[in-house]
Length: 159
Image (cartoon, rainbow, N blue to C red):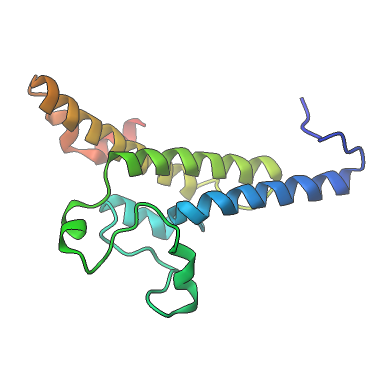
């Protein structure tokens, strides 16, 4: 099945689909700037739950600081509580879902990227989601299954 929008001229169709995919990726990344770029540098931010500042983004009055203005799940480096707790289960789920969508848009429309670091990024976010979910289940039902939440690195290998 081909997604052609009823446009028979191939270069025009590629252009229109590329513009739509780029616009969708841009809108997603306005709110989840962690999904921007390759994922290699952002992976460290995910591993430590946001304690490492996102690379490529400035702070204060720098020109690139505006790229995170609408961003969710941003950890304020000046807030001790945010630094200590990191992002939560909702952010981990949002990262996994939105990065999967942006990778699909990228690969599906021929935009470069998403073949190696993207899946690692999604796996890391999904492993944090899984381990945080296991912590919640352990607190809720109290079966002593906290071992499932102790090792996110094992969860990333399984996911």
